[in-house]
Length: 365
Image (cartoon, rainbow, N blue to C red):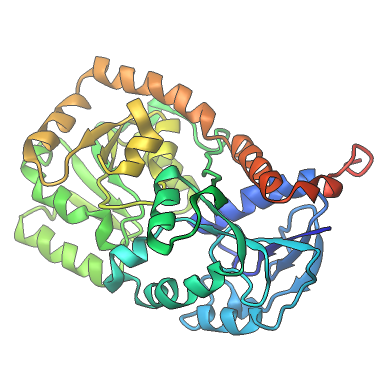
């Protein structure tokens, strides 16, 4: 049989989905003979390029990229003896027995902020699921969500989690500035809930500044008005874009990462912040409780007393030490190596013949 990885959606500057895809496919290609559908060829994992995707179908290549991608992928027809794995929800419309990865259903919960994707998840994805042998997700929460929303059999949905590169994210106590600040990362959409943090300003503004990254567009304009109305202009800083090095420094330097999302499929920033030695305040939504366990300070959204307790806790050394001790064990679970192990187990469960594609020690030399 043939194992084909669909990476056609990856652009030159990968973020969430792209980082997951790159790490999982690199690990898989190190273990198995894989053929690739890909556009970006400079940093391809150890595999053979089967189909070169046009550059204009990749994520980040314009507003019409998703439409161009769907039209282009319809031209791909692979044999029945081929298992196609997509590390995202961008499957091949005409391929039977494939596997796609659904990271979250946020676009269905908040349709106004993801209109094109909402339409795809409502009308396109159900059709694609009929051609899927299995679905992979990044959390048990999303696994249950997919089964309930689409009626896809739960025993054909497997969890392949995200990971954190501990060599890239590490603690640096000397990075803490004299002027303490709270950090919010990836706050581009309303479900990230920056608005509620601003509503709770009286609990933190006298002690901390608030730094908000990756915030732009209409949502940022709404937040700027709110900041001005509440007299927080000198206490809140927006950063539209930060480099990877800047992001790591912010994680290392912040007094806490604040991550009060209304919904997530997984939530990578809290793990990255914990790896950098900083405590995390997170909403008590199901996936945060699943992923973060005892390593975070949880808040009940809309509950001021809950927020007050969390801001008090990050000032207490003993409380922070307890959470960071739990974080060490937690982060060992969420390595990319463990994620690749989960991917391999899941693929074997779906297709036992996968073993025929395994690389030998001679292949790796």
